[in-house]
Length: 149
Image (tube, rainbow, N blue to C red; front, side, top):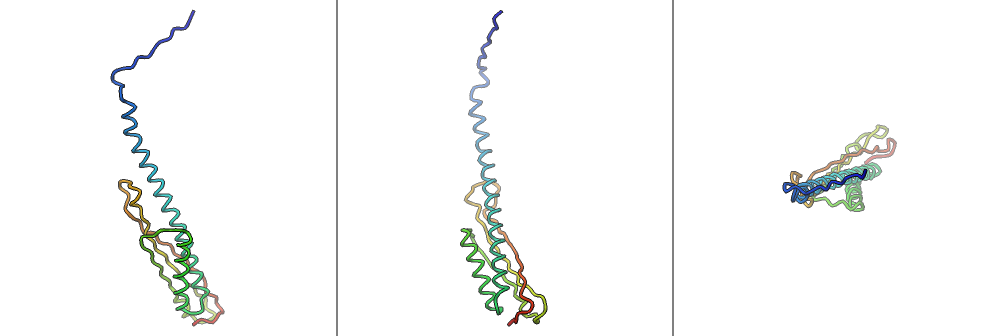
């Protein structure tokens, strides 16, 4: 006995179904890719900000005076962000150096907060905001027994 083959004939209602599937599937796939890129961009920016805040706090904590601490912290944060090629729409560095007023022998710290607005508008993902503001904070101890000014 020989097996019989049946030929599938195209049904008139299935014509153009591949084009319809592509018309629905491709935009959904592109939306997913855009969301993955946006998530990656925000994750990388968050890590860069945390690194910049850590560098700024450390630079402030090893300075000798409050004025020098403020200047060196801002410079360290800006240099760190530039070295990591993080393009911020706007950025701000705030440093709390009130620990310099504590008497010698008292534990104190310098705290730096770095804020960056990351642009997302170039991704053209519907429902995604045009920009997102991220903030990172780090604290570094000031030497307890070093003279403070």
